[in-house]
Length: 209
Image (cartoon, rainbow, N blue to C red; front, side):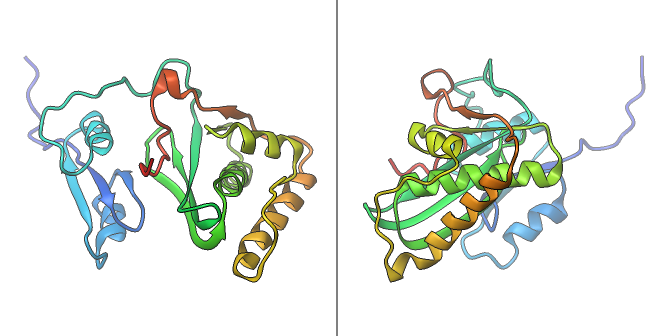
């Protein structure tokens, strides 16, 4: 019979509310997200599987709740990122974010910008994920549930009908920079449609529907 090493299991940490959210492999990474952050919600777990279930269930879920779907779902490419945007009104305050599909940790978040649309946010989120992948030299894909934004990225043009106005000047500067970056790329990493019917909500979803 093999002897136990006596070492406690390596802990991982879930942050539901913090500077960044997701699963973190060390206390130092977790602490950086929650220390001094008002209303931070986080917890340690003894396994990555348990942490991923808890992240999906939320901070107020009771123990031993099974995941509704396996993760990663069948057919999902890894490594990859999912992106989503949230806009309170049309136009309205806009933000977007990206999530690493392997760890379900938040990879980036931008906004809120005072005046935008959901499609603009989805477009910029896809481009930001592509920039992250290219800068890191990763062989990764990007998933979005916005068919409109996917089309804009493939055309390398943000085809919004929102007229520029002073409150959205910073947002349109982001759009123009994204278009210039796309135009300079000879090839892009795969940009794919998130299959909500098969896989459930996109991990980057803001949960505000």
